[in-house]
Amino acid sequence: MLTKNKNVLDWVDKMVALTKPDEVVWIDGSDEQLEQIRAKSVASGEMQALNQEKLPGCYLHRTAINDVARVEHRTFICSRKEEDAGPTNNWWNPTEAYAELSKLFDGCMKGRTMYVIPYSMGPIGSEFSKVGVELTDSTYVVLNMDIMTRMGKQAFDHLGDESNDFVRGLHSKAQLDEEKRYICHFPEDNTIWSINSGYGGNVLLGKKCFALRIASYQGKNEGWMAEHMLILGIENPQGEVKYIAAAFPSACGKTNLAMLIPPQLYRDKGYKVWCVGDDIAWLRIGPDGRLWAINPENGFFGVAPGTSEKSNPNALASTRQGTIFTNVVQNLDDNTVWWEGLDKNPPKNALNWKGEKWDPASGEKGAHPNSRFTAPAKNCPCISPEFNNPQGVPISAIIFGGRRAKTAPLVYQSFDWNHGVFVGSIMASETTAAATGKVGVVRRDPMAMLPFCGYHMGDYFAHWIEMGKKLGDKAPKIFNTNWFRTDEEGHFIWPGFGDNMRVLMWILGRCEGTVDAVETPIGYEPKPEDINVEGLDIDTEVVKGLLDVDKALWKEEAAGIREFYGKFGDKLPQELKDQLAGLEKRLG
Ligand code: OXD
Ligand code: MN
Image (cartoon, protein in one colour):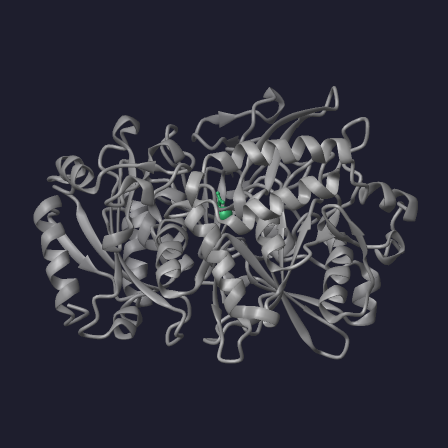
């Protein structure tokens, strides 16, 4: 037994009685134990060892073909009152949910081993950090949790013998039956029950389930914030580092921005970029009154397709050892991995993500579009020296961003904190039909938290406003970016990737008060000449176009926001109603 904590022991006993495993293994986190579990995982076929010379410590896993992504329609917030889940979550009465799910969990681990995984979200010893315990029948989960969290006995030591403050996660693959797949959160009980899935986002319970859905609820009650944000540091030639936290919806390049390589002109001057996190930030007000952030995770669960030496060399380097690949192509010639966008040389002798013989000439994709790598953060060449700092890092700027073809300019700054909360609350992405240049459907995704907020989003907005009051003039400045503006033919105008640094430099200039801005109806914008385009094949005229605010489009936008806001009823804070009215007035 790894702990004397009775709260843990009693709960594990209850879950064992429910799920009835043949054997219970407590995960201490030792190399020896992990090696045994890897061997067992390979023997059972759950994972395959890859070429250990080229990819030391790397493994391949294939999920069931019906189980390849998060399932938002089967994800529930089981708060006692329906209104506490709010209009953007699926709600399930907790009494009913426990009763129904108990039927599915009853005896589901017969013939299997239950692993008891203690883990810490955040560095051990940090006041930010919180402990979770996940019970699972999957060796894949154990080995991924080892990469994504600080796992093992150290987490129980951090919890102590008395505390009841830990998140209780129960997971079983059961039969992987998609009709009976449920990802349920009980925020009032610090509990997560996940069944019939083996896909990371549904089963690595420390990540989206705990560090966002449960933690956002804890943060509201305890006066801090859990956000879907990357954290990066920009070091200037004098060695000073300023930190930025940024929220973008899934598939808008968060991992790429978090690990960006500055353009040559900045590198020549001595600028560096450090990655603190690529997906989740926990933010607290520090003793100095500023906002401080940690990344609660210990690894990256990144999307493989599109990751290349060109798009994100740091991410690619992170996957060269100790990494688990899920649903990518297996090159049978040398037992390595491949995915679309890695390079232009797909392997000829290969298996696709389903494990079938795959011909790259067939036109069919080899890797699943949501195939993943689980890579240790310590592998990342630009991992921040502050990564394990228990105090976290102080945040100078917060960025919100979406994928908009026309409406949002390259960058703008909010007038103040409350306006910034408004800017975050109206975040949206749209699909573009590139061929016709026609603008597609807008999906609103406030603060990129739509699928991850564990309580009523109106209350969530109010919490943001509350945090701003506490921060006062020490609050980070808030910005919005859009790397995805397109021209008439539907081509991206802004080069993106490392060149996004040029926009971050304007943002930091604003935080330091060293650069001017122009006022527009939607916020402060750069003067076109203040975005450094040296070495790019776009000029200040193009930047001017990228910054253009089309009033007619923004009037449509305001109407869309009004409709969206209608969902939140009485829970929509007055401050945001005022912000929308202000925008409409400025648009005329
Ligand atoms: C993720 C997501 O996997 O946001 O990070 O979907
Ligand atoms: Mn994410």
